[in-house]
Amino acid sequence: MGEHMDANAQLIEHMMNPQNYGSIENADAQGIGKNPQNGEKVLIHLKVKEEAGKPVIEDIKFQAIGCTTTIVAGSIITTEAKGADFDRAEDIIAFTLGMLDKVPPEEAACSEMVAVALKAAMDVYIARKSDPDYPVISYKIQNSCETGEEAEENV
Image (cartoon, rainbow, N blue to C red; front, side, top):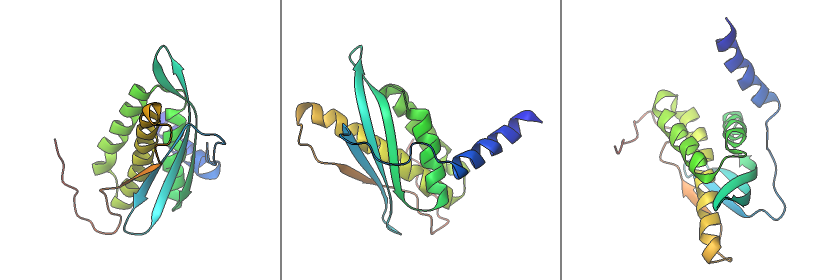
């Protein structure tokens, strides 16, 4: 009984009370994930601290112009990423992107938008170490929430 309900309860919790929604003043980096089809986008803000020479996500917030699913995906992914170092965050991104072929296209598009926004923010952070004025970058998603076409898998 327990576990399946917990996952749903967790989903509903993220839906009712999205975690980490908002912005961070003086963020170390931001990244944007965009859905070119419908103009939806996710902006991720990162506060990063260096621990043992590794960047660690001290704080993370997201803002979204998108549907409820995008907000839920943002809440879940940012909750996972908070406190993670960049290697772990890369794993979270890879895991999220790896799950996309198992979910409906519109959900895939929403989750991918958050994942690529996180990736963009991390890339900006790394670039800013050598160029403090490096601009915010945005990545477009591959999934479309409009057609049922399978995205090409590059393995």
